[in-house]
Image: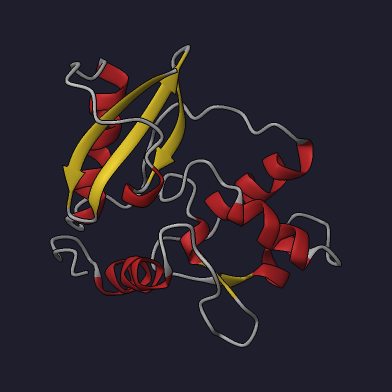
Amino acid sequence: MNISFRHTLIGTIGIAEENGFITNLFFEGELPVPEPPAEAPPLTCEAFRQLDAYLDGELQTLSLPLAPHPTVFAGHVRQGLLEIPYGSTASYAAVAEAIGASSAARAVGTACSRNPLPIFIPCHRVVQSSGRFGGYRGGGALKAALIQLESESGGGNSFRW
């Protein structure tokens, strides 16, 4: 696994790639190794380019080769998350219903919490049935800011966090 680091609008981010797939996105507080001076491979550079464009409100759909999920259920959750439109949110229960597992809202929440590719797989778009944001690996303030960015962005809105 090759991990590259870059300073972004949301802090230092690590993006890992292996065998032609993006495998992980690490937020600043969870970076696995000290920042190396090595140059990022082309795929990782493209991932950072798309992430920056997303945070600038210029890109709504991130298009990268993402590593497969380790379980069938996690793969179904990933597909459900990718189907939530930019600028929208869905409840954990709605995602469970959409993937044909209507009684698995908690399991959807667990899959979201273990999502190795936050932002690229938009688990920040999933909220509690009450409308409360719920948890997020990057923290509640970042989740709220990403939801706000998407809800306000017709393109060109800067990320405010």
